[in-house]
Amino acid sequence: MTKTICHLIIGFVIVVITTSKSFAQDDILWLHYFNRYKLSYKFSIDSDVGYRFYFPEGERWQARSGLRYDINDNFYVRGGVMFVAGNAAREEFRPYQDFVFNSRLSIFTFTQRLRFEEQIFFDGTDTRFRLRYNPSVKFSTFFGYCTLGAEPFFVLNDPKSRVASNRLYIGLTRKAYKNVFVTLQYINERSYTKAESSFINESNMIRVKVSHTIKPLRTGPLFGRKKTSI
Image (cartoon, rainbow, N blue to C red; front, top):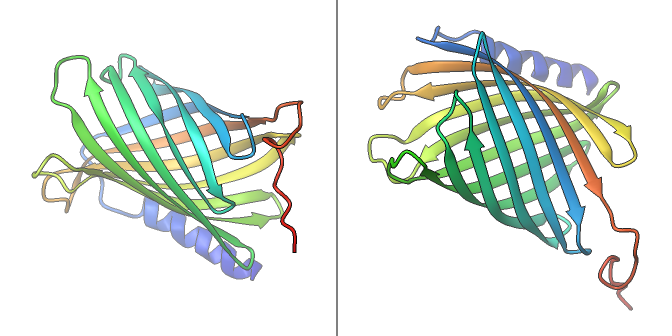
């Protein structure tokens, strides 16, 4: 099983690297902090702050926060807003809605996230409606949790674009302290032309992600699972 997993990882990296060369390329360092504050057993506030540095120059900031509701152990929904700014990005206000489903098979955890976004730009550009589909698989290794995933971006209100861009990524996650996890991730993102047979820009990102869950000190019926009687 371990040998098979290693072959899958190597194959994934080869697919990302061995493709035709793009017209433009960005190298990016992405620092990202995620925070989940549990309001109750079902509700929580999910927030994150991110900073991207574009080599040799340029930067992008983002801040996002939303309310999450866990329907059951495998499915949750979330809605909130996001702000984007920086000299390497257009300023925008971005409401979003998430639908996330998890399933498990043997040692593998599969996650599917469907995200709708409304990109409202401060420069007066028409609002863009976007759909992002993010399937991924996570499994435990000797070094920590390994995650492989993809994320195509679909622009819904532009007839000239079907897949606007796509991400492929691989990451390794380790527990740092109690409810704090650190992930080192490589992301390859490509933006496509109308024909979608060639891409016009490629970004290679190294992301350092810190995920932090805060659980309230108080206890009670809102913060624990309900016991079912037989």
